[in-house]
Length: 309
Length: 254
Image (cartoon, rainbow over all chains, first blue to last red; front, side):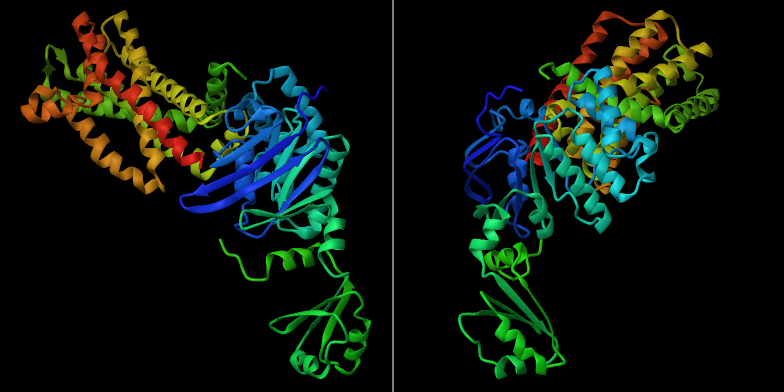
């Protein structure tokens, strides 16, 4: 496949205001061919707005955006003919069967009938819905609907797949199944952008994490780099009644950072084994001593306060 | 896809397929109800009224019912069903993730509404002709008028939908807009039975003119000057379509 464009996505100082509220605050990033990029951030960080600008469904208030070589939003419609989008909540057509959903959607891309039918056959195998081909949407489980949404987004053989929180609200088995599909797509060379609230999802799937908050990019790294560079290597969580008494009785042995949230204390440091030993005499306390992960980085960088709405 | 009629037809195609899936209820609502009205009122009231302007009351009413159904088909589609696709099923979001723009969606929806108006008008015409209520082949010109009526009332309904936050909102339009148009627009009785001021008010609204076009075509008394009645529904169709696209762009692309 020829690539007349150097980057799949190139955003320069991309900005979005809603009235006086700045939702996306001059972010710049590039996404290259074949990357699996996760956009992470708390509610209201600007993730969904960024995706909306990316597909050209909301104009930016400033900055430059280029997707697959097309200027966005001016050439958004042409660009959308070559990408696939999986929405946050399924918007499949309940009036139609599985096959009809795919067929109608293929027509939106101006695909030829024969080509649509050929593609439908391939996709039903890929998402393992051959036996449900003629089932209506309300006869599908949550996982099947999600798989059909992914299949629908692939109908036009896209060069870029965008997924907005693809596994929110799904049970663990289904999430694993969806992850498997996405890994396979990446192996086939597809460039993928996803937003998620689940750190384990981002850590397992994404080769690259763009961490956003308050409309800005806080970090843009691989998950391993983020965990290595942005947080202490180990974490000790202590929780249960008597945490405060234990904390008073045991002054910190060295450069250890501590955060207390209600009845739980989080300790971050290079080596916390001394601290773990002091827990022996406190049967009322439970603890977890583990290497730091992406969730710890996320909480450190975006804070612990609740974000609603 | 550079070819815009193809994009409009992709939207039309989706709605046509959904309609075919529920064709029995769709036909029952869209055909049986106007026919009940036509025959019950036409023969019932007609037995008291006798003739109106030289034709039997039921033949007079036929044109009114055809105009009314062409309006209702597009109005219902443009209010309740379009709102469902936009806000409840999020069908439009799916289209906007594909290479379709807001303008394509509105035009595709309007084409479908015009199709429904034509379908509904032609089925009633078919039955009415079977009962000898139409005069001659002139009556076939009713179909393009029904299509215009579909664009006009569909566009007006979409403007309402573009402001709606729930289904309840449509009650205002139905009660304050549609119902007076039906009662005062010459569907059930000639508008010259009304006081001048009301008749003049009614003639600013498109249904009056749709009836004025369809009635002579049904009774075989069409004359060229009547074509001037095209201007009001045409103007409503063009302005409401343009305004609906502008409104939906503001609402959906933010």
